[in-house]
Amino acid sequence: MTTFRDRGLADALADARDLPDGEARCAELERIAARADATGDPRTALAARFALVEAYLQLGERWRMVEPVRRCVATVDRQPELLDGRPGETERLRRHQRQAVESLFGTPRVPLDHARSLLDDLADRLGPHAGPVAELRCRLADHLGDEPAARHEYDHWSAADASHPVAGCPGCAPARRAELLAGWGEPAAALAALGPALDGEPGCTDQPERALAAGLLPWLRTGEAARAARAHVRAYRRHRRERAAFPQLAAHLRFCALGGHLAHGLDVLAEQLPRLDHPVDDLSAMEFATAGALLCGLAVENGLGERRIHRPGHGPRPAADVDVATLAGQLQSLATTLAGSFDARNGTGHQSGRIASWLAERPVAEPVPLPAEDEIPDDDATEPGPPGEEEPAPLSLRMLTAALDARGDAYRVEPDGTVVGRWGEAVVQFRRLGPQGEVLHARAVALRRLPADRRAEAYAFCNAWNHDRLLPAAYVHDPGDGTLLLAADVTTDLAYGVARAQLVVLVTAAVSTGAAFAEAVAALP
Image (cartoon, rainbow, N blue to C red; front, side):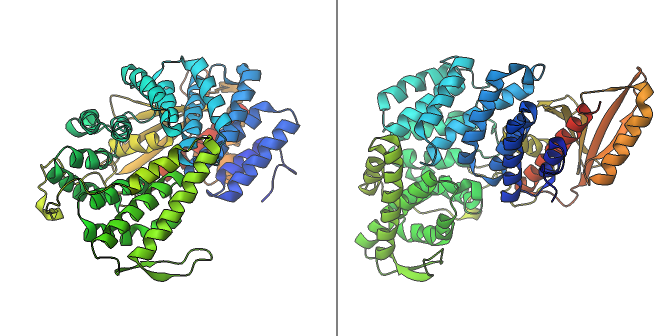
């Protein structure tokens, strides 16, 4: 591929955005940003780092976004005019700051001082009691083991506006609150916090299953074992196959251990154990390993220690059928190592103490029969939820907005169902066309318009774009006001349905190529 070394930075950036997701794309974006820094081109450096952050999010490696986000913040602080007239980009940068701080919770690879610096900067800009700031400070204090500080910030978070544009998914906020309250030993309060997610219209496509998983142990601890059993069956049939749901699996394993469902729990562990080698992040791996070790230890105490579970090979570890007693030791060792890594970074012993408390737990309820999946009626509170990440479903407005929510994008929904957002120099519109709304149409409109007397140049630009690039298809529109509107669109027929993960890819492609098109228009003389 031709890089910035022998082509202009703008062309190199457009080419990099067209690369498939992966390390090659990230490496090229890093090189372009570095070259832009060296040549004194802060606008291109900023655009390249925005694209790099999106690439890391797409790869599921959120911790890698911390440094480019810090560089973006510093660039805009030095030259705020780079985002003049672009409020959507300013808001996008603040959301990326939030995501960068959140990455600290998932892995010890993020330096604590970097995350704190980004959080303090966010507080200066949004206010110390803004919802996103209070939530992050609450979760950070809890992560470090400072429960009084966490409770103090929890009160501010609960009182804040849940619809703040920089906040995380409001539909998942009840589950995040419930997990904190349950960890502080308040199961009844945790269940009360889950009310909006369980009793109302789900606010995102992860609900109500995530809320059900968050309620498993609180229901056990408050004497509602039967409800916990139904919630487990309902939520696990979705979580068992979704990569993004890996962090919820620890709750299912702990439910099986503490609810007396040891044989079933070993079945779940055997099914999910291969995913431990490819976790979402280090925190979810630590919690899964701890919950698995607890389950195996209780199984040994109850005469199930000779059962063997297949553990696939990974790296230097060969594949083997491991007895439950041995597996308990392996999982506890992994959990202890990961907790130690967190504590070394944090300068506390809280994570090690937390997994020790999990491992010391004993059953809190007598086992109740687990309902079969087909015993749960459609109108039950545990009815089947939205399709999984890789399960095709008819295209819907809810799926489309969920894809944008997953990316952390800001948008608005017009009365006719058109979804509109701004990315860089482009306004992108998403519509569902066709008799059943089965066609996804994305249209990117460049903010810059050309005078009508440059019609030949506009046509030449669009022809060159269509010759050199596969997507999007560019064209010129004359609105009759003496200017020319340059736009581009992508149409995808989804008559046979679309998986949630696939739709995120399609939306990401439409946004990135549409933004690249609009930036090319903006760069015209």
